[in-house]
Length: 153
Image (tube, rainbow, N blue to C red; front, side):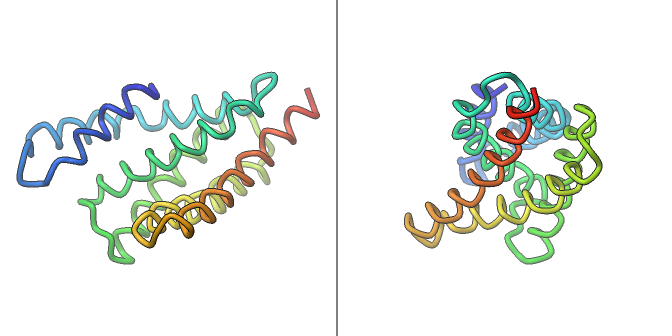
């Protein structure tokens, strides 16, 4: 799933005027499989010895966020970002519920991760320092979930 997501990312990087048919097919495919990808990412954090996967999960979550925004037409207005964040929250909420996390954990993932992920995506355009700071925040959120469940296993 991760390799496929990166390949889709390369296609989405094309200008909108080019490859429009392929872009819409890719977005439809990602949209259909995004909940499964989110489940795989959450599951990898709940598996034994998850800390080595935190960085990769963080990177793929940002890629998934990019797709959520692309599914909203790449609209970077506050309405487009809000719709993408809601879509992402739905994927993450469903994934967290699938692993029978406590309701408070499910809501924490669904409410705190999407805004942080949207911020990291937006920070890419503001420079490497701001992007790094935003990514550290996501890494902290992801690590907290992984550490909580690695202690309880």
